[in-house]
Length: 248
Image (cartoon, rainbow, N blue to C red; front, side, top):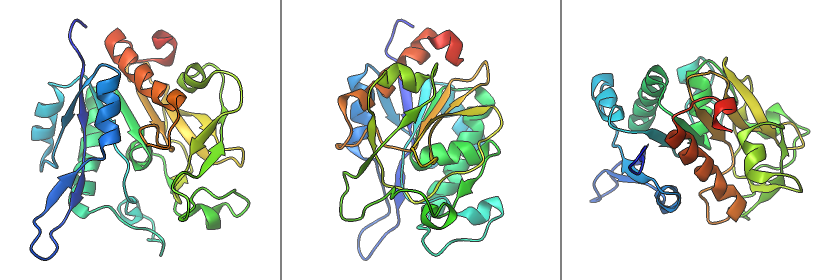
């Protein structure tokens, strides 16, 4: 690839309040990290049909799925939990169509936070709706008093996450109450919190380079090592090789 890769980014959707109109917003860490590692971010608004989504995706080299509030479990056949704060319905409807189109086109993708959860559920996995209840022996994964809350990470050898972090103690930010339960077919777990909660997944599908992290490497609380995940994502796109073995 002789030019900078163009990376699509979805956005949060905020409905009007009072005199304020509806608007989109994207935390700057997402596009700043893409720029920093040599990509060109392209923010994609919530389109209404798959034909338009595919038209946009055909001009992109990869896609970054951002974090946000919670997926509505009722779309996946589960009852809603009282702690769930659903995404705006316009965003979630678009995001679900978007990921299916990304999967159909085998476009390289990196999902963060709810972006990883979305990648998992659209491909056939499911979620724990509230970690403190579903996994009562788990450590705290969110501290409302400490936005920089962190925990350690156990990484599976031979994965992208191992290339990013290497040996030694690893600590990543943590601010979620939902988490991946059953992993989607074609994906593998590549990192867990020591309590067993899944923190990263990667595609095992030969022609699809897809990764996800529950933690947020774009955050101001992230470390310099965390940001290297974006480098691996861009490097994989530039190489044009969509399996973990080929990207190495």
